Figure 1 (tube, rainbow, N blue to C red):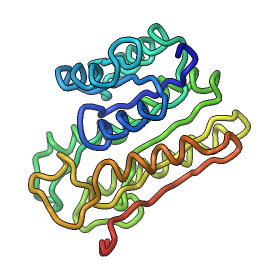
Figure 2: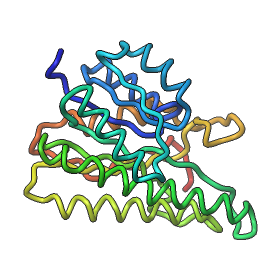
Figure 3: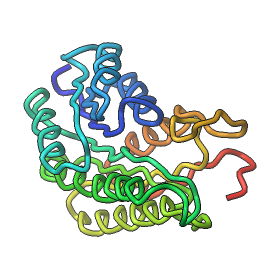
Figure 4: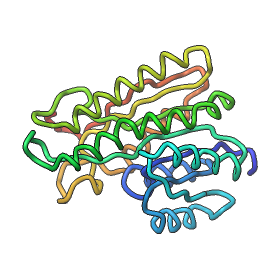
Length: 229
């Protein structure tokens, strides 16, 4: 329907982003799917109903212009924006002498600046809709993992969520930081036992989004049973 809420997801081509898109679609949302992998996005958008229900937008969240363009595309296609999920991000091996400086740079720009850009670009439309900001944090955004710059980026995302929430008090816009533990996603090179499925995190996202308008689920830490960290 033309008045169904519109849900924008970055990092939507796989993992938590794709699982959230599928569950949001099943719950009546129209979707704006953003990622760098346009071919995967096109396939997902087709699966979720095509142009009338799901829009695929190629975007690099480290580009301010790409963030502006994906929000503009959402408003042009659907006329509104109700939820923006800044989910794009990637990790790095632990250890201050692991990875390359270039890998570190890309990770920090994507996980921190990219999330901030997405929120900034979406905020005017979300204020108008009295909508919802979501950010993907991590359990290691609460507990520092030894030698992990990735952990430092997720501490920044946790702080960003609270900074945004505090700014938006009185606006009607809600803010949620989703903090997964181990999840079986492309983040990991090897399959592992005892990790959550992306769908487990998608259910947490939709729980936060589906609360009454006066309820703001500010943080959700979701671990697999038995995870030590």
